[in-house]
Amino acid sequence: MNNAEVRCAGIEDVEKLSLFLQNAKVSSEGIKDSIDYFLLSENELGQIQASLGIEPHGQVGLLRSLVLSPNSTEKDMFILLEQILMLARDKGLTELYMASNKQSAALFFTLMGFQPHDSTKLPADLYESEHVKHILSVDNSYFLKFSI
Image (tube, rainbow, N blue to C red):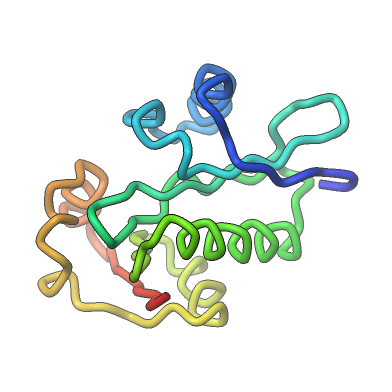
């Protein structure tokens, strides 16, 4: 993502972000309702190169929609994650959760300070999330938690 700029998404980005996520075969459901909890990385032409968002639930949030373009690096992912943690803090969140069934993501997020978390002990609000309901139905799924 050379020369990419990370910025907070706004309501004007909903359509462009939704298309970016759909092209990556990632759900764009609920994007409009939480657009101010999303970060975008764009190139000099204004094309989205990466995204990461938070699905807020009270004082906790669920990371979602992490999509990186093929030319992205681990450094790019680190910058996005660092920025999303600052956004979560600014929004008054106290905990962030990450859910996946891809074990490769666990190592990176653990290195960033996320800790394994028992899926039966999530905050009650998270069980209302469609994403969480889906992850709980997938084999080999896991949750990680970051206290802010």
